[in-house]
Image 1 (tube, helix red, strand yellow):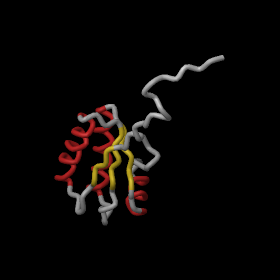
Image 2 (tube, helix red, strand yellow):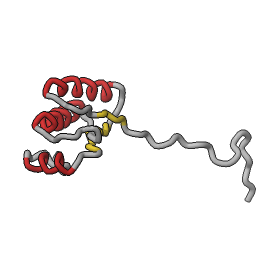
Image 3 (spheres, one colour):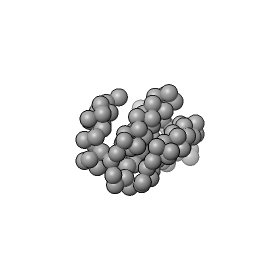
Image 4 (cartoon, one colour):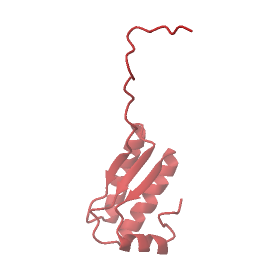
Amino acid sequence: MTSATRRGLIGVEPIDPPEQPAVLIVPDPLTFADVPLLCARLRGLYGAGAREVVCDFGAVTRADLAVVEAVARLRLTARRAGGRVVLRNAGAGLVALLDLAGLGLDSP
């Protein structure tokens, strides 16, 4: 059995690194007036081709109803765009408040 060598193929060709999700940084302080702008930014990321967006809440120091509203609206925006949001760096207070509101991290 003879194996033919193909010209130009030496070793393994590089494979593109796995696609990294886009990241949306949630600012602090967050007000109800900021929520539409965050949703517009999220829609822009989906419009640019993102399928999953990581929403980073690491800067948020106070969990309040404006943050709960932001999470609810961001999830709704993602669902309407056919995408997915993942919350990152949500503090214990925010996690507890989201659970209380029925928007826990495991909720759709």
